[in-house]
Amino acid sequence: MTILEVVNVSRDVAWLPWAVQYFFLVGLSVACFFMSLRGLLRGAARERGFARDALIGALACGLVAPVALLADLHQPGRFWHFYAYPNLGSWMAWGAFFIPAYVGGLLVYAWAVLRGDLAAAGQGDGVLARLQRLVALGGAPAPRLARLAAGWTVVFGLLILLYTGMEVMVVRARPLWDTPILPLQFAATAVTGAAGLVLIVARLRGDATPAADAAAARWMAGGLLATVLLGLVWLGLGLTGVAETHARALASVAGHRAWQLTAAWAALATVLPLALLWGRPAGWGWIVGLLGLHAAWMFRWTVFIGGQTVPKTGAGLYVYQLPLGHDGLLGIAGSLGLWVFVFVLLTTLLPPSPPAPVRPALVPAE
Amino acid sequence: MSESRRNFLRAFGAMTVGAAVAAPAAAAPAAAALPSSAAPAAAGTTAPSPRWAMVVDVGKCIGCQSCTMSCIYENAVPEDSFRTIVSTYEVQEGGRTAMVMLPRLCNHCADAPCIPVCPVGATYQQADGIVVVDADRCVGCAYCVQACPYDARFINHHTGKADKCTFCAHRVEAGLMPACVETCVGGARIFGDLADPDSTVSKLVAKGDSKVLKPELGTRPHVFYLGLDDRLTGKVEGEPTLWRPRATESHA
Ligand code: SF4
Ligand code: SF4
Image (cartoon, rainbow over all chains, first blue to last red; front, side, top):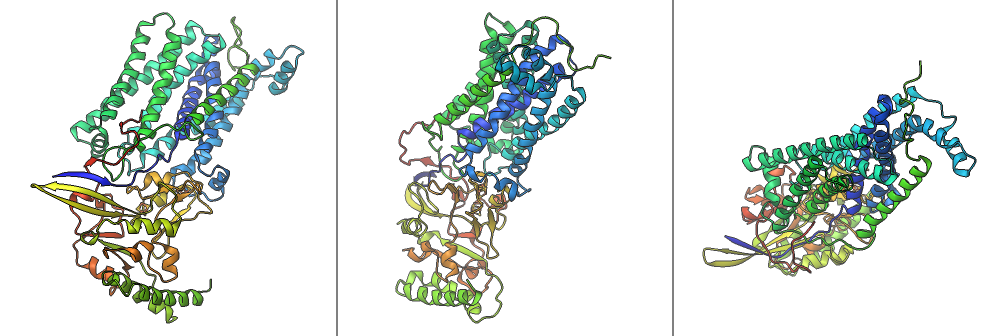
């Protein structure tokens, strides 16, 4: 029997590229935050540069991510409904509480661990120096507050990873989303992207050091290997039919040329940075950094935009063309522009770390 | 609106519907379904809540899309969006070719996956089984659009809110048939109260040979199909021949 579909509905993508930006940025932020913990809370001085760059990445992404999420709502002015009428059976409703808790915790943690640096930077007479002193509020170490805020942010960072994964995973209507491995894949690609971001941040700020690069490379290798492993498990479960959800997910896309190409691209996007990390040719930091960011972004683009092109009842794939306006390219460029703005603001306040020995983190001198 | 006034309108509506559809004999079973449940309410007794449902007799559908059009006009559905549409397939088997129609709409599922995901509780099920969106509360997050396994929902580009078939709740409340039922040329759409054992839909469903879409998901749809081939109840594995502006498959 052959069936030709003559008339059917074609549905638009309802989660826009803004959603891709949100999941990308919030994932990067949480992973960057985790990377900053060791160096800023109790690491040796040589770990501090990497940790500071990671924290700047976490702040820039964490502050822009909620804006992207808000823009993805078709009624952004009604965001307060999330708090006025929460339906706590929905993962998205919980997200509305986790996001401010995470970003708030991140800001307090950043202030507590960086106020010494801020005070040190604000030695002069200029407006900026005065602002730095003002923000530093004296600049004395605040180790207890730092640990408290770090603990709080760890909890809400993990909850962000959990809810962003679960929110998508529970959508049974989309077989591609409905696999228990998806939250782990989001986390692994977030680590990959975050390590890439730290490499880029260090280069933009001009404070890349071999020690910091080595730390970023370790994190990225870990993220990439986890991504490969999870990808193989996903494929294995789908091909063998052991797990019905994976078999359904694979079947929903396997037959389409566009998806075969996507799979090949994804494999390349994972293997190429691994190879570069192995060989470390000249200029690897920029390339690997950008490739890491690309892997994280592309994974989310494929899951969200690609996933929504798979019809739930109809044949073939819906066609998606990136609109040029607010719903598409302009949205992506806009969130990137906002990120650059926040990044410039942060790095103006927090100039690169002094090269020589710095105060060992926050351990009070006893 | 007071209860008695609503009841009056119900009864009145039922009469007008009866009059309006008296002529086309094919639509008569559909029209007959509504008064039986509306009548006790009109009499002022506390009637048990109806459970609205639809039976679609696929064999009677001629694919004219009158329902699609009347729905668009009745509900001000914006361009490029549909609350209902008749999916049309050309099926070839054993040297024979046939056209198969499959009218699609919100199934008003008893276990609707679109409801629990709504972060602000804007999507809910009325006591009469109709799944509706509170437009004053909806934030347009489109989570429900993702969660519906039937592609029955969309974001209305004019209102920025979730939109879908409501069984024409505003008409049903007034004792009228949903617009698609009233305009169905083939008499394929039959609407009525499943809680009333004497209604046409109850009798048709009770025969036991109706089917629902994607039964394996456990959503318990309340749109039932008569004469539907099993190969069309899920995601249809067919050749897409829809006109697509740039017909290259691409998403990346
Ligand atoms: S068909 Fe879709 S929109 Fe309608 S009730 Fe079921 S899940 Fe909800
Ligand atoms: S789009 Fe509206 S109805 Fe749908 S889940 Fe979001 S808030 Fe609820």
